[in-house]
Amino acid sequence: MDPILLIALAFAAGLSAWASGHALLERPTSRSALLWITYIWLVPFIGALAYSILGVDRISRRALLKGRTRDELRRLYPDIPALTSRELAVALDPDDPHFALYRTGGNLSLRPLLRGNRIELLRNGDETFPAMLQAIESAELSVNLMTYILDEDEVGHAFIEALAKSAARGVPTRLLYDAAGCVSTSAAFFRSAIERGVKVAPFFPLNPLAKRAQINLRNHRKSLIVDGRVGFFGSINLSERHLIENRPPTGRSIDLHARAEGPIVQQLQSVFVEDWFFAAGEELLSVRHFPQQQDVGSGFARVITSGPDEEFEHIHMMMVAAIGLADQTVQLVTPYFVPTEPLKFAIISACLRGVTVELLVPRENDHPFIRRASLAHMKPLVEAGMVVWERKPPFVHAKAVLIDNSWALLGSANLDPRSFQLSYELMVETSDPDAVTDLRRWLQTAREESQQLAPDWFEERTLRSRLLDKACALVSPLL
Image 1 (cartoon, one colour):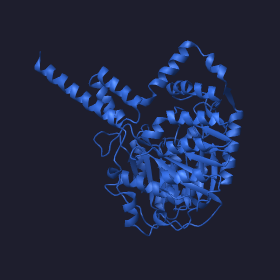
Image 2: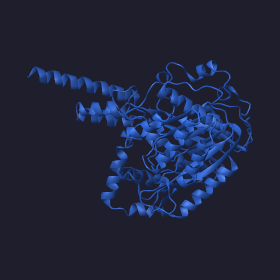
Image 3: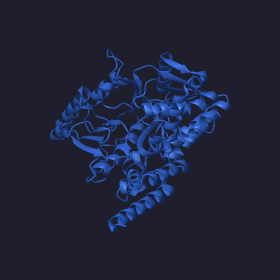
Image 4: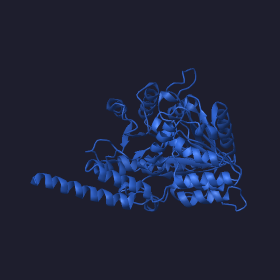
């Protein structure tokens, strides 16, 4: 046999053995590991190469912080209230109906539950963008903006202009964007902001030669913090597709964001500080970014984050726990519903307890593969009692969980493995009365514009459709 061929075969076998061993040790589920190992050996070399790009989904937190843990940062900067002070932390009351939820969130996030917050729900880009732009225009100390998508359209130009004007006033202004989310945005667009004084950094560059280049792991978080006192978070990207009023529904997205004031802004800021340090290597731990906070409202709130650098899937576990602790109602909204087994068990268990579980998803998904996988997962859940609502266009892009109409989880995470395991996500748990009431009303309005998928609807689908649904669900662990 040709020696070159022997060397090639040996190399392919060695690469496949390495990839298989890594999948066996590191994949989060046995099913996922088995699928990857099968693919690796069925398609030699290409399978291992695909796994090295798409299957390796954990990174070291020590690499992210260059060896400094969060506790070490706290010791280095003891004067930063957001990192050390618990003056505004809530003393948990065992008689509080949300006690178990609050304790779970604290143990997962290692952040205190903070009182004295005011959280205002914002609908679509029509309400969100003017509020964010106004906050940037009034900035005096700092502007820190983090987004997954910044399109080169009327909305993107408006934000770049606002950031540039902020920098021109002498306000330190920073923009952190995800390289994959902004893959269609030109380098010249970001360069125009840099030339006007805005500090700009990509999270996980796509260029394989760049430092910390990544394709599979993404920063899906979305936040804006101005002067360390006003914060925005949610699931709205900076794109005109989120503008709804007086526009045709095709290609548009209905969505939710929130404006926050109070101590919760410090937790939002601390997330940006860590992500900026990772992407740009610049430390922002100063009183300029973390001013002392006071009570401004009555809402309890806490930031919960997750990412591939963390040992546990914090947001995933919080959602499973919240559904398990519900007494009366569970309301879920997500554009991409590919539930994990624990999430499915939690939903079925809630239905068996007599809890009303409702799921809102878009009727027309921008990823047909995902919708088919969703339908396969929905069928047994609907049979157990879950109610599914498919909303007509525009596309539903909001992500939220509402428990017993009194506790909410709102932010960037979808109900799918990518958000739980591969992406950096940011959610806020809150029992702010106004925010919870607004979310309940928004969900009610959305359901009125939706069609319910009854159990018979699933049975009436053709054999071909059901087979395609199951096939898509089968490979969902590879996502």
